[in-house]
Image (cartoon, rainbow, N blue to C red; front, side, top):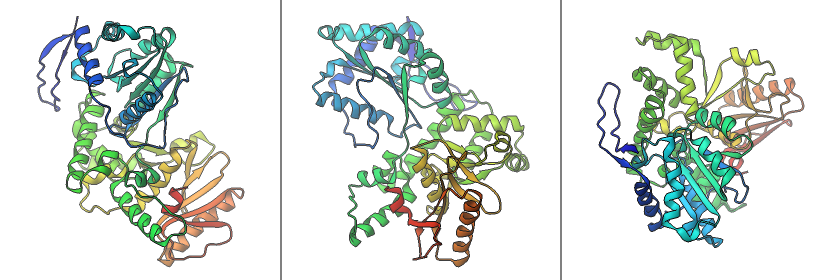
Length: 447
């Protein structure tokens, strides 16, 4: 018999108190019945809809609180609307303290508990939803067995890219399709705000422009977007703490919590900047941190694996040059920096650049940037560049206008077949050269 407990989060150097009680089939029945007795939470539609009937394990990965669970609930709603009986649906969240710690031998209890609760549905197709599955040991073996032996559609979510990608590659080869879940796009932000854009309407354009200003301030984490203004800062602080302790310190069993906290703070507050390992290493050493470059690389890897950031390489076919050149850092959502900033509107230009990066990262991964004296923010398909993009908050300053245009023209000489695009929040009614397209940021992000 496995034992579970209600865990109390232990801070580095602190104590953890456990209150054990037996976790068995009866416990699982209570958890399953609790789900069936409650109504599904209200959900708001996202652009991503999970496929049904694929005979694949559908996997959702992404940062905590980004909306993975609500995508599961939305999928359940679609099933119920199609006539599926709720008793055919099984939902477990593996962060439920009543399931932890879960032994491999406990997996068999899950379907047996469901069968005993709903014996009339044993022979019917089931829909299995497993949330935050990375907390369950050897979960991929269990999911693989369910896929191969049960008449079921299976959906799983997780918050660790390295853990999930490794296990998906080894344990679920050919059996899964994976989706990344991102914070709200600007189009989704408008949906959550119940704002509908009407083309050629000056009033509508004004409303959408105001919403875009809010988007650059709030970011796209659903709960933050929907929250009352007076609690947003507290929610974001709790997010940052949860990710720091649960997804970094505890998951990777890190001993230097102070270094990780400082590195995380640096990353969150420096989106759309070049991450120069030597410079950061020297800066941290000067602040009194005892660390090696290997430790810095390892800790950065942990932050990246937890979906907190993306590291954009230089657009170059040479893997060696990609390795030795600094990567550009983009956080998954700039709002996570709010607890560490004194001014809520700080770095709006860098937030716009990250918004453009995420706009394309939702669609494809072959992205890079052009380095040098005249940097280009984003390159699509670095092997054979298709599109060069620069972004700017305002083009009202003539030196800024000349700098942005010169950078794109330099990139165009290097890659003459690539389209050039300048995206600005305030275009200042500029007239670009013939080979550069100028577009307002909010309008571009709605395409």
